[in-house]
Amino acid sequence: MVTIDPIRHALVPVDADAAQRICSPNYDEFQNDREIWDLLQGQPESVLRVTMPHCNARIPEEMLSDGSPEALTLATGTMEELREGAATRVVEGIIFLYEIVDTARPGVRQIGLGGMVPTDDIRTDATPDGVIIRNEGIREEKARGRANLIEATQAIIGTVNLSVDDADNHLLSAMQDYADARPCDFEASDEVENGHRIWLISAPDEIESFRAVLAAEPHAYVADGNHRSAAAAMRGTGEFLTVFFPARTMGLAPYNRLVNAPGTTRAQLEEALAGQFEIENLEVPEFQPTEIHEIGIYLEGAWLKLVPRETAFDADNAAESIDANMVQRHLFAAVLGIEDPRAKELTFVGGNRDAAYLKAQVDVGDHDLAVTMAPVTMDQFIEVCRQNRIMPPKSTWFQPKIRSGLVMALLK
Image 1 (cartoon, rainbow, N blue to C red):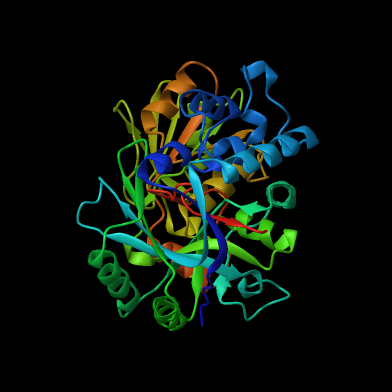
Image 2 (tube, rainbow, N blue to C red; image 1 turned 135 degrees about the vertical axis):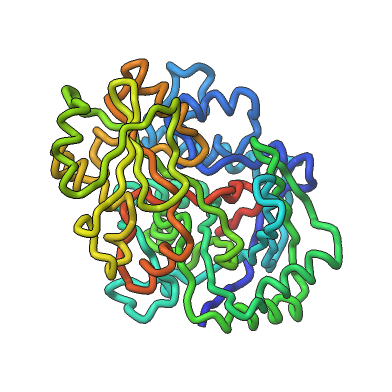
């Protein structure tokens, strides 16, 4: 049974105009701190000034160290300004609906149920019967940094994206009926004009009705925000902020790689990978696979297309069947000697950057080669969860992503 509880003290924008000024991409959607600083120059009220306080500086050279005491002190003051300012208000005891209007998927209605979820519901070695299933390893230092921010701000701003099967369509139907019955409380748009709409639900009978529908779900899967959920557990809040989306309504985009491997040649790769992959030379400007088990490699000004042979993976192992897993084992570890899948030689590039961006990074010499892969499918993602396995790091880029700052949970 999946549980959702009301947010005791929710901080929300006062209207759509305030929502547009405050909400932003999540901190982990950026390639570097300079990109965050650049956004803050045009959007000074962005919640990123709280979630990434070290980037909230007058000039780039004055940016602080991420997670430093000085940055956390700055976050404390900025959060106080946000809470007391005219752009936000506090509402008590609410859950909410969150609808994403995706311009790239006009026939899909993605709408989710938001609120608080007990951290004890996360499946771990200590809680093997937990109904919320993680699928990615946790880096303790990263989770600790987010936990320190929760402590400094006394707020949970980062929202965890959870998916549920909703096989009988009851949850989606209930949410759509509610959303269609009245206008949203506020909305905002993102950088590619996707809409993000919020309905606040405070009536006890309506809250209990949604809780009952969600309780019919046997499990939920962490789609985005493994470290944010771990941070709340580490901090000891007992709960974390989340939105549950029916899995079939969610979109997935590619998650590619840029690689620093000086001296690597095209001939070397073709020879080393021929045993595990069928290899084709492509004469195209960019290659971004759209079907799983097709992999692109760009170096020396041209693209290779790799298709894994049957020996490259165990088809019964859902995690090993993910293309990113094969790339890590057969290319990065076996050929390039990069055994740590989070090594500094690897730069992970999410679906908000295309193959042309990766090609340009290699062409100017910032990286030695690029790897492109098709998006993981939702069936692949859920099967990894059901087998209680771990996804390869940085292999799922859910898109569109939840905006940060539309609904926040105050701890006091």
